[in-house]
Image (cartoon, rainbow, N blue to C red; front, side, top):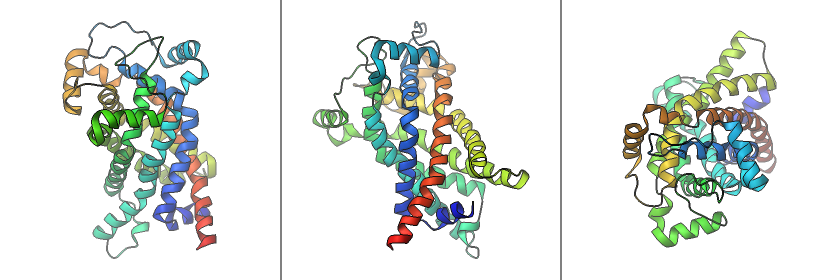
Length: 311
């Protein structure tokens, strides 16, 4: 534990970016199929009060997609997901400590900012770093969403076919320019800001409390803390995630923005629509959070040792 703590405290911003991105890429390899399921369930019945549910639950949906589209089908958008995770989580995990330290130094000038644990400040730092990551990763998430929603067997939502991540980016740029690549970035900021505000502060708080109240340490401590953080993120983030998926997947101007999407969704489908795909969200975000944060406990010391060796 001492080595992990030292690494997280002394690693550079670039090192934190790399360690966070690598950890998230490792996690998304395992969680991308359920991310695809979540995307399709969130689009199912879009702006329809009485739509037939083809995807009834996450497990049934996963098997149905696998049956129709095979292994390649359930891993659609994986390359996009890797690049997105490097941008999003590289910023979110790499900038979290620097942001927190800057804010702590303002409010606690006489205390080492790395030693201060203030929950509101941690929440703000998590939200700011998450929003930065959302902006960086937005074009890739846009392409990923459209790739994952596309199916020749079961058509859910608007259908856009991209042969690859590069094809998706170039197609959007040719049709809509830079503005098109950042379509829906405001929804991404809301979604990721909410999730980030909950994830790391909740993880760190739970980890601290477990260390204080129990004898847990090492992987067991990281696992328990990650599970709590994962469930918290899922509850906070799902409504914003539904809105993000729908805004990204549209090709035209079905929604003017996240607020318009929120209003139209609730008006047509009810508040319950904001928690469409929630089961898949939990099945995704809980293991993704667990894997990301557990991988990060390994990548942080690894990058720290490499920096120490070459500097």
